[in-house]
Amino acid sequence: MINYYKKINEEKSKEARGIMSEYEFDKCREIIHDASILAGVAGVIPIPIADAIPISAAQITMVISLGNVFGEKIEESVAKSMVTVVATTFIGRQIVKFIPIIGWGFSGIVAAGITEAVGWIIAMDLVKSKKMKY
Image (cartoon, rainbow, N blue to C red; front, side, top):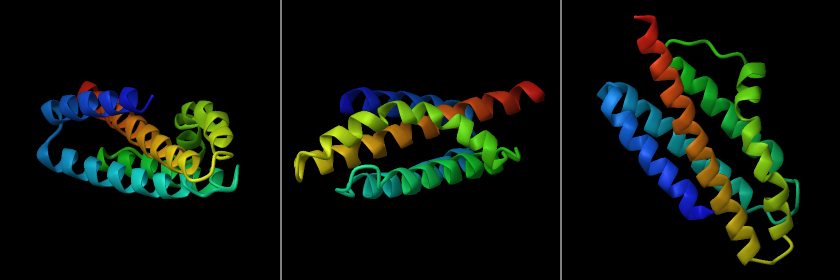
């Protein structure tokens, strides 16, 4: 699963570099990277379900910030809808937390990888939408 998200991240990042301005790409990379780190750190919290709020907050903030890069005002409710896809991994990450240390680390890695994948997917949608307007 980790390799799957790594592959998506590499593909989307490469695609983004091809259609975004250097400024847009650098800002997106910074926003996505920061959110991924925050989600990864929160994902390591060993208490099941305790990571849900900080991970969601990092992802929602990421989506709103990505919108700003492309001049789109994204409301919090819309940002929440955009990251609901991430919730599908929530149960799996919680189950592995019952495996001390290894499970906690795995949960953090998955949270970071998913956050980065979602970030690049949303950034690509935003840049494509922007280009269609002009």
